[in-house]
Length: 471
Image 1: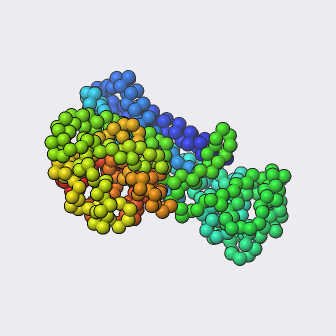
Image 2 (image 1 turned 180 degrees about the vertical axis):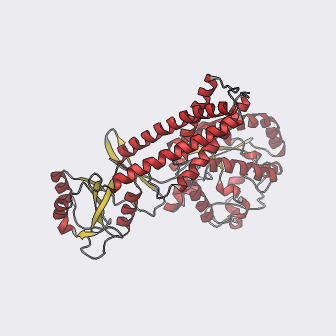
Image 3 (image 1 turned 90 degrees about the vertical axis):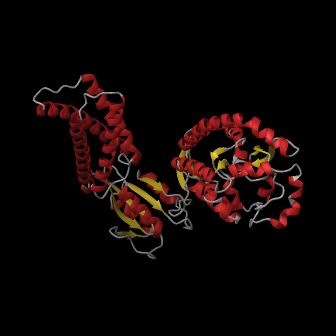
């Protein structure tokens, strides 16, 4: 119900904002012409293009700044600040576009007046819409009357969400406490009784909808109350037991061919983010592969002249959710490095399942240079292009390492491993605790943002250029 109402409200608001842009564009043109004494003229096609640009760009920017959200605002001031920011961004982009296309006839005075009129129009739209919605909310007869069933923090969260929810009009008329008087009602919400009073409250209070915000350990079967709502034609919503207001994970409802499912996303990346991430991986992966192809003859010759053995080091690693793949690097150690690892285990400087040794005797002379400059990592662009790795992600663990993982460690492989990551740019050479490495990986997974990936890529280049530690 709320989704359809919000969609209608946002559609109306977007139409009003579009009209504000059109009126602002033509109004700015006439005002500019009036100031110039009728001498100034702007081609109709150019004016139309400018208006369309502001309309579509403004819609995109306002959407990203939360100006077309389903949340009600207690004050208009935060909304005005976002509108000012969106108008500044849109007209800055417009100015750059006009200058690049050499449309010098579009004066700065016209753009300034246009921006002011758009800002005034969009602010007025929201003020008028808020007045209309508030009037509906205050009208107790037409507003949707909601009964809240629950107690404690879940009931408080549900009430707070309902107060912030944008709609045509709804009002929480009271609370039924399933704890039978153990906890009193919420502030500004009258306590209407316990579960034994459910039927009488529905019949006497004119309830349109019931929201069940029961504690997960609520021991009573609520099917009889749901059946009663159905018989009486009263809509109901149930906050699932899986919902935790303080959990860092997202709980959402998705439909698979009409079948509703509860989905708990355990990382911070969505489908759109995955697409952006894959595009960057593919584009920069091809660029990295080209650089790798150019350096290959010289690096391969140096490796061969330095020590016997293959040019590439190939090893099975664990990818996303246990997928096994072969990782590729330029060989930086002697051929018997894996056999000698056991005898050097006592020299391990890492606390945990990873192996790190500052002056590892297995590393060749050329290998030290390759590691110091991170050139040994370039063959991994093959893994990136194949989709086995990402540019940015968690460190790809070995099979032996994963066998010793505790359950919480395995969440670090719930995402594609990367050539670089948060652990690497945080100072690989200074971190000697495996649990700290895992914590950084989980921090990256839980708070993933596309811009963070770009930031880590830039920091990686800086670390490599400054030679602060191998990636």
